[in-house]
Image (cartoon, rainbow, N blue to C red):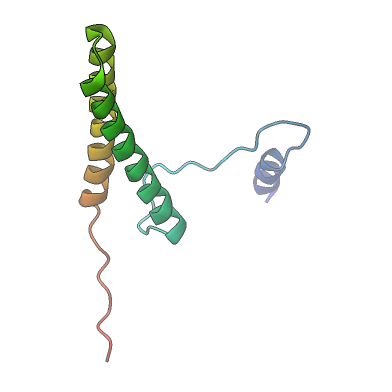
Length: 99
């Protein structure tokens, strides 16, 4: 009981100190609506950044800048694909058939 109170006190500190967040060793078995929306946003941000970097690399005359833009686009593509791979490895929950 005392340990739990100490954890709550450290999480609720005031005076400009950051609150501690609980970290999971393994991800939870469910994806909440908030999680789903955030994952969708992350995919959208990475896809847009990838497309913009590619577009601007094609417009660029300076080879050094063009190279940096291409690498940036590739980085965002890797992030996009990594997020998708994490989502694909999750098995859907089996639901009970409705009667």
